[in-house]
Image 1 (cartoon, rainbow, N blue to C red):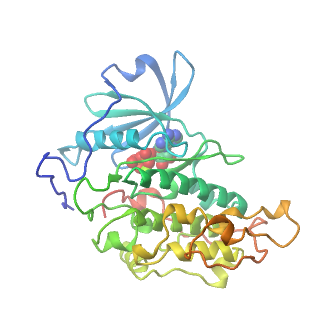
Image 2 (cartoon, rainbow, N blue to C red):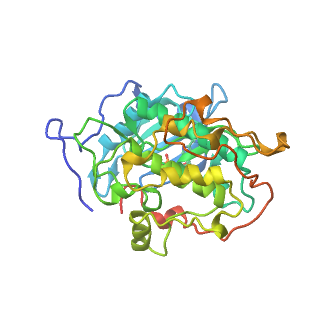
Image 3 (cartoon, rainbow, N blue to C red):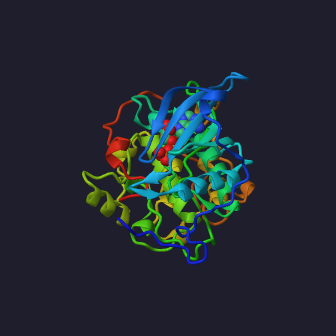
Length: 350
Ligand code: ADP
Ligand code: MG
């Protein structure tokens, strides 16, 4: 695939940011840190846990390869660092502490998220109770809202890029992986950023303009996965996945959603709509009644939903004020429809 446009002014690939504030040290990482196990890897990066020798503090070091497919991609690595700097100041976005550079890599020292990916919660035999899911989705939306307020779009939101500070009980979320993120307005219209097929919005597949609404589609996919344990658009092959996405072919059948509350389905349905302009913003999503229910265990009465008027939901959330008591309160297993990360092998390239 070579749909790489250059910005005529800077010579950089379109939309890449080049300005960073964090000093980039050329000191070998091993002098100040003990680098221990691998936390994860993608096509062009490996992330390792490391411990600062002086303080004993843990970090995640993301080693971003500067040469990719035989060409110099330092600008892409610097861009990821620049986006992290612009996105800082939100507890929902992973913090950047320091940067090092070697001949091969730009190494970003990131806040360590010890709980791993929320992907593991989606594929676990025991799905999270909805009250926990809504907390994670609320936090994700807070992070997305912060990005959007700063004219940033993530464009690769998926359960592998949303981490937890601790696993059991699930801690707070941290959004990671800003390799595909862009600042709106820096490269004219954005059309050509490609995430992972299962999670990307129809406008991405159709090369139509990308906006903040593109991230909200992915939040809908993540919510579906957390409450059902299934990936809504995943087909047997890429073509089928594309078709499912572009036709918004989602299984809302009783079988798929038998243990999912009506409000959860309402929330998901409002995000998984083809026209980006018809999707609610992150701020509007944050006022959806699903996200503000009382957990059923604390509330023996029929589940009370905050009246729409109390939270200034706007017209987008014309949902029933009371939901059926239909929560994921017992362990169950679903047939899983996930493909491993290596198979999707898609970050930025499909
Ligand atoms: P890539 O661009 O290769 O997808 P990511 O930034 O998504 O790189 O990191 C790959 C994986 O490494 C993540 O999915 C996660 O499992 C792990 N990881 C990344 N950042 C951290 C972190 N700050 N703390 C703990 N694990 C991390
Ligand atoms: Mg990733």
